Amino acid sequence: MKYNHFIRICASLLALAFLQVSLSAAPIPAPSAERMTPTVKAVRKALPWVVSIGTTQQIIQINDPFAIFFTDFFSQPRRVFTKFSPLGSGVIIDPSGLVVTNYHVVRRASDITVQMWDGTSLSAHVLGYDVDNDLCLLQLQGELPELASAEFAATGDLYLGETVIAIGNPFGLGQSVSTGVLSALNRSFQEGDVYFENLIQTDAAINPGNSGGPLVNLDGKLVGINQAIRADAQGIGFAIPLSHIEDFLSYWLKPSHFSDAYMGLMPSGIVAEGNENGVVLPDVLAESPLSKAGIKTGDVVLAVDGKAVNRPLDFGRLVFNKHAGDEIVLTTADGSHAVKLESQSDAMLVGTRLGMELVELTPQLRSAMRLRQEQKGLVLSEVKDEPSFGVQEAQWRQVLRRGDILLQFAGQDYPTLKQVAEALRGSRAGDFCQAVFYFTSVKIPVEVGRLQLN
Image (cartoon, one colour):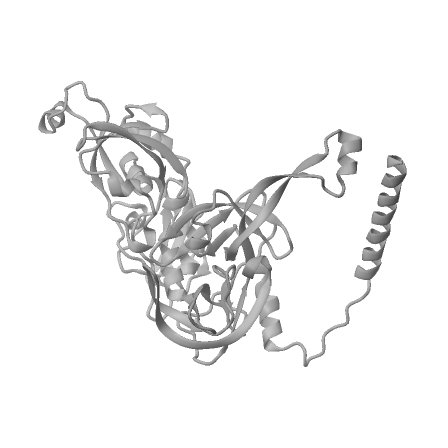
């Protein structure tokens, strides 16, 4: 009986499969010109670079309708499968797999899965985030398919009353589209202790799950990242404008955050848009690869490796994935400059990744700090201030103080500065390392847990 039942089920499934194939083979008529509206064209242009973001969990299912297959052939009437739980939406901003979303979308996710518009799923790694502006940068993992990336509208290219489109994953219903108008600019929004300003207001429907998805214009270009709605109103939603997004990306899209390569910009420096064209480089460090190539603070870069740059995003996309030893050619008003990237020094790498300065314990320092002469470790001499868009929400930054002593890092007891730097080489922003510090204020060693790297 079981065998006959199995045959009937298989026959039914085959019939359904053939029916589906025959239906899918039916030709779809080309839409009429009246139906191919600017909204439809914009959505078609944007969909390939809109993603759904979620987390996954393993579920054991028992008494499933097809358990007979597992019982008969595997002697196990249950199965383990992975369920995708939607959290929000995101925007692919570079074909290398960089995705921008809201920080609150992934803040509590233990693992992150990104689903493309065609159903492809990839895991993602958090590179960096900005708590104050609720932005997060993800890197897709594994073998990547060919990816489309968003086209950004010009900063400030917004018109009150123009039609805008919100695309996202509301309530887990992926690739949903809603339209409205751009209602207002420079709005502020407060929900409890959370306060944001300089936001775009729209009446396009933004529901839970739309967060992190794009707000696009009728040209199919990104004008903002959907963020929130007013809970006490209807038709009032908010999106983060491009000016905030570009500042955020300008901070993170540097070689120093993706490898140990060093170009010569201050870690906190923000590339700015030029008055007419090109981008302005801030805070070029002395004796750096940039300064050695003749680049100075305030110089306007017009092209990178022969490709024109008109905005900070253009510059970041062309330099972020470079490594030590690579050469890039920057074109400025006074000609071309070949810049050969170098490896960061030990101290510089520790400062970049950990946001702190560590120094070796000397006999004189032990005496000044009233420590035992046999005390080992590295002294925390400075916790560096980070710009608002570079703040990693790490509790250890709130508890460590100048004078605390690093006793263990990445499994190494009493590491030297060189050993800490070696543990950090090959790392990138968003990675984690374990550390144990001796808190001199309370005179006890404390494991501060996972330090998130910048």
